Amino acid sequence: MSEPPPSTAAAPARPVVTPARVVAGICLVIPFVAMLWVSSYAKVEPAFIGIPFFYWYQMAWVLISAVLTGIAYQLVKRDERARKGGSR
Image 1: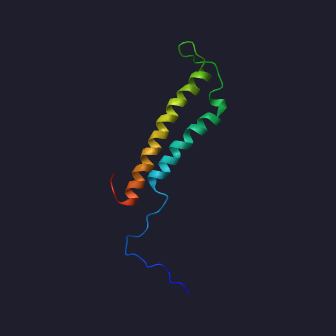
Image 2: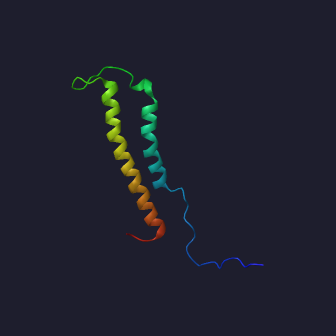
Image 3: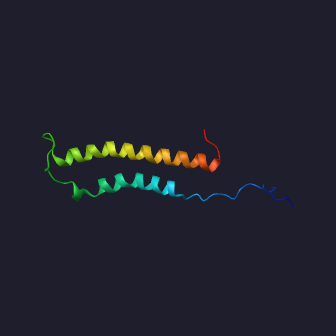
């Protein structure tokens, strides 16, 4: 019979679901909810510099989504560094 691998006296494993990862997940879900809730932006007014609301709202979400994705990336990266115990 094979022996189980020797146990190390390391610190107990940290949970995979951490507050930082929950916030990162929320940051990634927000743009989907905003774009799938069409009735909230399916209108012409208020126009912005002559562009109907429908179009500028969606283009604004392109920028907002990029920012939220960057925040999620930084949160997960920081969480990974904390889990590994080092700061690179």
